[in-house]
Length: 590
Image (cartoon, rainbow, N blue to C red; front, top):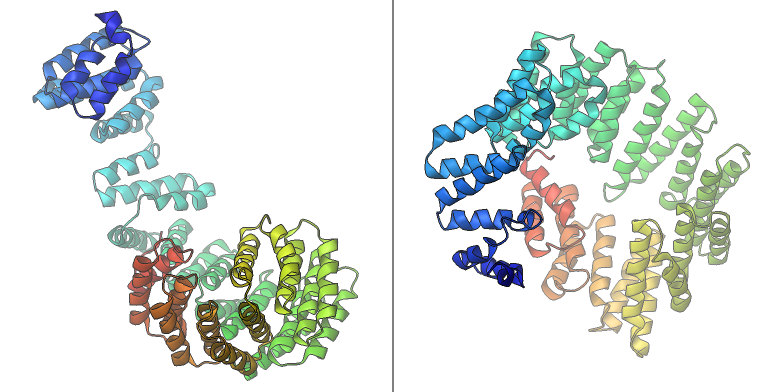
């Protein structure tokens, strides 16, 4: 019988097991449990069959026999505990657990293995007893802190969990940034954060000179995206640690990354007032202007007066700090503002050419300036000059990020001028670019060209040609001409496959000119007619973004982001939409 069962037996047993025919599976598996080599393959399923069939006494005998044969196998012992509980033999189960505790007391070397198997099986209370015994024997309450925090988390004892997290920080302050990132595994709910914050605030009040607590409070405010309160605490932290503004600067940078430009500017302004002799001063001065620039460029319609103020700020910075590698970026920033927002292209070209004369500027920065010059010549409709500069950077910076950027600009230039086949040659290479952003941009443009040139239809080709010209006009900030061109496409190429792209580009033009209701109307038309097409999710996301950032209707934006998550779960914007929805709802983001 044994040999017959072995012959193809396990697959048959597994088939019975998968089908829930545990009694039949048991008749197969029983033939393998005596074989030391086969046992690992059937152990879990055999024991589970016994459990499903409520043969708990058989399970107990089976496990005791294995424990006698393999006394060092911890899994068999923990499984026996479970069998005891299933039979209502709680005292017997506790005796086994107590033996684990005693073993750890007598032989600390076995503690890690015992803890691992007990944790895996969920016997957290016993683990806690072992850890507390270890603390007592070593007279050290600051060991096994993360492990204890995990146990208290499982027990839903949040106050005790928080105490352990703070303890682990106190003894590992050099690793506090790493440990704070680990905290997100433990503090997962709004209530947890509130409890954590209350505990830390209490400790700050009780020990105001202990900067660790202030640092923790900063971290809590940053997790809650409350950058102003983080700034207030960063000022206290800076005074305690005499960091000369570094912590405050860090908070300002994080605020900028999270688009809280108003708070970021206030932080950088504070640093430039209060830390004039600190090493952070030049950086804070520069970041203050750069953050203002981001804010101005993303507040539609863009005000010319604000652009002129930015240029003046950059000029004052260069005058104050001198022309160095640290401030040379300000010259480039001024040039781009002149070119793209004040229509002063020749001034911009002169500034960049002057910058390129300095022998000490970094090679990559010089290449970036050449790309900027190429863009500015494109603003002037001097495409030949543009492609010469792009190609020069391509050649100088082969297989680098900036080299790929130059190739992408050349591809777009070919696209703008209707040379679609030549654009595709560049894009085919860039699809394999090392950076995901450039590869994705190349792939998107390539597919767009293919979709609108794949048919042997002159009207389709001409519609694409007109659309590319409209995109160039938008790049040149010639919004009126771009809008007219797009209107012409809709008029002359009715029911063309490019209609949804035209509507989406019109929405972007209207947003830049501050005509938000017109932008919304265009996006709504895409949602009604082209929701399942390629620009369906782009339009829905921009729709929500306009309500959030331009119209400032936060409740409407929250509802739109929530709808987006439901309607477009696989979109590349879904993660960002979920993040913005939760922020608007007031959630703590981990």
